[in-house]
Image (cartoon, rainbow over all chains, first blue to last red; front, side, top):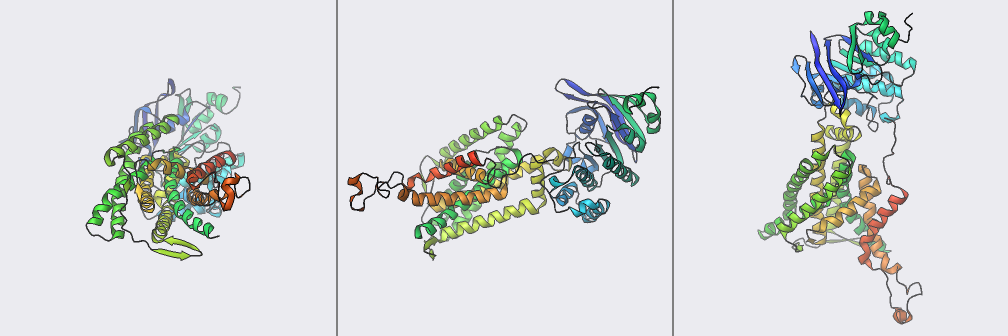
Length: 237
Length: 325
């Protein structure tokens, strides 16, 4: 079943077309990655899905048209985004940040989920009373992911979770993403680190200048000579 | 010494009211980086509404304290509606405009409200009927009236209530999150339009009570009273660090105390005869030649504002800028 379906999605910033009428599908339970160079329109695509930028085209989520839905109503429907640059609230404590993740929820399971995040991210448990601005970059990224999980997402949009992190931390973050997917959360992952993204994803889309240049099974894309040359830093020979 | 303690008592009373008004400035600034110059007019409208209602109630034979409480109960919803309306009609359409546009609009809103009040309540000074019996308490060489005690207690209760709201409730957490990053707050499910409107409405409710207290304390209200009071409360917010809730409380109290002590001592300190440099004919037989009298009281708030802006622009408890995010 298709959980997210975008058709002829366009984003304009003034006169610049950042996203040029792309089609994109994410099936329930899938881990799909969207890769491409800086400025290819990956983040704009995610922001358009969440209603953070003006967009045209059609976006359906869980069988419902969300093309005119304001951003703040999406978490209630299970569509949650971890924004680029993490977007933690620096002067709120770690625990308050996590509570903000559950803002849209009214069910009684919030306290249990908080403990679940602390079990998954022990570093955050140690620092629960600290303000989030005092955390290191890797800890902030974990906090951003844990905060998104507090919303009990059905579809999680991740915008460049590896950005600015040391290679060891990047590997750790990707392990976490894989684990979240294994638990049944559908994921759309935007990444510049094409190799790592394709290694954990089921399917991938390659974006170039606002359009989808290639798409297919992640394994096939990893083997595709065009992808190898342009995104994996390997010569054609 | 008696002057000192007495002025300290007066200063804390006045400062508590400044603090409550300053919270309205600081909360709005914290969340949308707007200095809402019309906030002082909301205080004025609160006082005017109460002054309209209280004499009627008092004439109907209600006990004075009940009449004042009911006056405040009428002023609060009116001011909340004014606060909501100004956000909805004047500021929300300009949310994405350059920062100068809402700032100038705020000055415009202030002028509009002031003139509306003039049309409704006339240019005259409204006098508060002397219905509250004067009760005084002696305390360490100073006298404190019942009204002063009530003002300090009510302000303390409102500040404690606001601190609880901001730091302990879901709405308060959403307000702080919106102040730090509105876009991400929206991604968490926060309807930021509603949170911003709530901020205006809460600030206006406190302004209404402040207006009633200020009017009761001085016994008069006029359509122009909001400007100077608003500017002083704004100075208090800047002194504490604009955008910072505990800062506004601290700044308000400090400003009130500085103002009262200044007013208490300026005459004495600028008496040229005291320093032996006054004209001989005036200083003979213990005479005085005072340069600045206590009518210069209003100057202190702005001297403080200038000093803060020059030496510590982020205020006493100001948020550090440039935190990693």
